[in-house]
Length: 334
Image 1 (cartoon, rainbow, N blue to C red):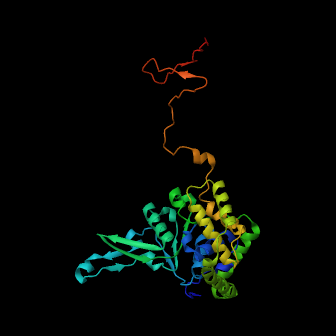
Image 2: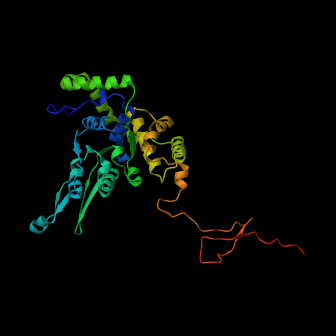
Image 3: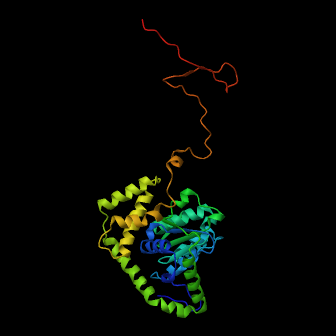
């Protein structure tokens, strides 16, 4: 486990009152193809503390931060075409995605990034491959990393299309439990007072969890998804009225990662139910919302005849808002 004595990190196993977030982060670390974790909550809920704490548990222990002002070239890298003309070979200048390979890419205030940059970031996070194209020349490289994005909803939200691209989402509300608040404050004060001594207390738990992550990454490929698991995933996604099939796929992967984390011999329906909230929280739609016309669609004011009772006659004047309604004539049978 990599530890920086100059800038010690708060131990992941010492986090208090963040069970849902810890589970989501661990699942993403076991299967980065889940698409990352979006952590939403107000300031002061230790979102960034949890993300940084996870990074040192990863095999490479690498944490790369994407700044808000980053350009596309800084993110994906670029090709040195002038060098190609001079030396006869294309030189790839790596970006942040290449540097984050096998580690973690952390994006604070992801909702403030330009949408095209977020879209590109999520594409690579899901595929594990970064492709750079310039003037007919392309270069590709592996970019498998754990993507963690944090945001404060008060500062704006992500478009639904981008929200759906995040595999898991966790909302971190303010805690109004006096006991939990006291535990959090005491732990933080103890860490700030003597970080080395505090970390030493959790060293055994940290080492065990790091080994557990490594073992789960190996075990995940051996776990099969049976029909009962598939059926429960379909039920939950239909109930949530989600768009498309991404939620089904993410839920299956997340359930498998949880089973691997717990060293289970098989994936149970209970694993599905325990990951469902993180998969569906940002994708769930109400039935009324799903059936409503898209925003900006003008109301349908066209008058259509009712085949059972009423008929409509064309307007008699240029005022098209006046429509005379008449009952159809009854026809006597001969």
